[in-house]
Image (cartoon, rainbow, N blue to C red; front, top):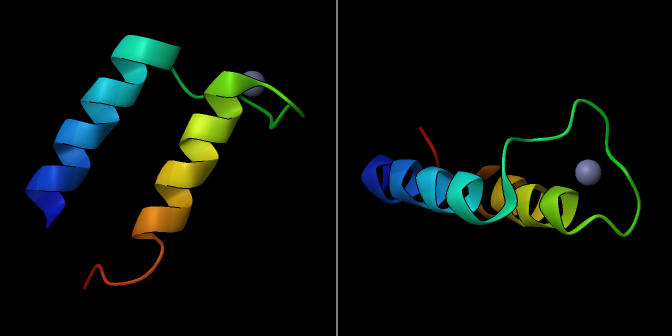
Length: 45
Ligand SMILES: [Zn+2]
């Protein structure tokens, strides 16, 4: 599962760039990272 997380993180960085220091509304980068956080906030040991 964490391998998927690593690959997804690389993929998000490639397409949307590094996470913004602060969440900005209607920012595609922040939305991508928000989705990433949502996906992995549960289930990781
Ligand atoms: Zn942003």
